[in-house]
Length: 154
Image (cartoon, rainbow, N blue to C red; front, side):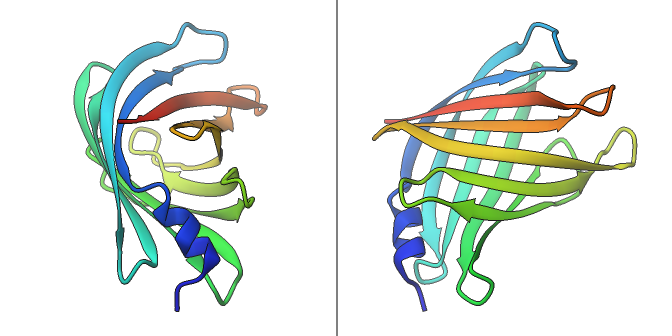
């Protein structure tokens, strides 16, 4: 059964323009790229599906994400996979009534073959603009921002 958390996800449906900044190393200048995202509800309004088209490090990039709320655990969950790897990122977390979310998750890095842990946050800075940030351990083991995506609803 879907509920208030699922209704909140449905408010994110739509088409978005993306402004993407990513960092290869702490303190380095970010790579700046653009893209688009389409978000729609699936499975009877229980899951938000996101399809992304962009460039990543100068190469064509596509991604597929899902975001849901588990009535049993009381937690939000998210999956992500894309054209830069063959693995799946799985995360879970919590969201506020205002739509600000914090997730933790992991994936198998396609280059190092090691598990990478990450913390992701999202917040709405206006009714049509959402800011996504991803943090991973840097070379010194301290958390470092890896990516920032600004979603602007069309």
